[in-house]
Image (cartoon, helix red, strand yellow):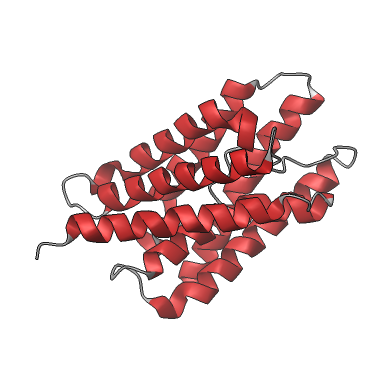
Length: 213
């Protein structure tokens, strides 16, 4: 139960701070800025990893949990519980933001700027690199203490350059909650399917690179 609570709190913090930065940037006419939003996402992921990494692994992302379940570094019996906790945290955050900013249209939903396939491919690649960094850094003793820094920097980097086109989700929970609460469901499937595909591909890559046979 402690693992699930950690995942709930961590995902709540991610969605509340990350999509909250988008909302506040909108209502203040650029008071946070695109760069500020990217930094916010990177920083909240970093601090949540250091806060809860030793307790639950701080996945705070269903795609990450699914990808981990395909390796030998995560007990699959926790899979459903983790995903439920993550979604609960995300919905609590989006619900609270809806109460605070009732007039905001999309509540920080991830929406494609151009053609759907453009965002679909980008999200696969973005999530692939994010998951690969998570696995490559966190699963080696020498680099494990820097996991929060490396993963947070990856999120910030990808949000910085791809955010204006895809919203740089890399996380189904981060996209599902604001989309459902705000009613913007048209392109939600992109951010569920593509992120899971990218994370799963990364887990296969890591298994191949880590295979000593």
